Length: 148
Image 1 (cartoon, one colour):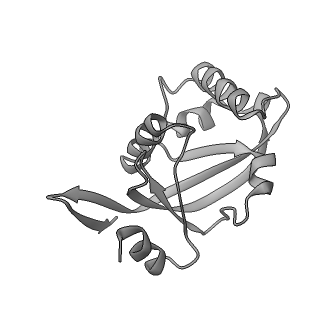
Image 2 (image 1 turned 120 degrees about the vertical axis):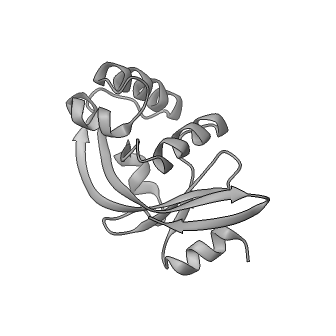
Image 3 (image 1 turned 30 degrees about the vertical axis):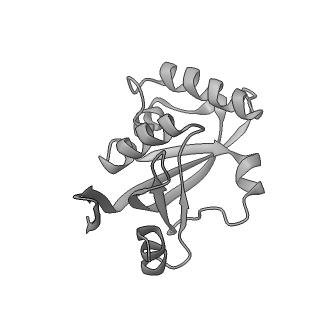
């Protein structure tokens, strides 16, 4: 049994996914999540509604790096709808990216949502907050998982 399967068995109903739209972005964002710097994320409401099994408050999710290897397990603690134009400095800081400013957040997320074909200034986002409950470390070619 690989670590993803073991984590799914440990956290029934959990999903495993990358954050972002490239392997490099997935690596960078997974690292920020694992370190507790990134405690929030958001996606378009349209893509959330299209998911077969979207995250929900209380659900556990396995965060993968750019090689689809597990980095950590998170638990969703909060979800809310917010328009792109109404995102606050606080949410931008919790996203943990760049210089943590709202200006950086808007620039990078506008580019991301434009690439995905979803961008509009008034688009609805699902803003998710989460906590890390388990970290997976790769040492000596063996995966070890540590509860937080």
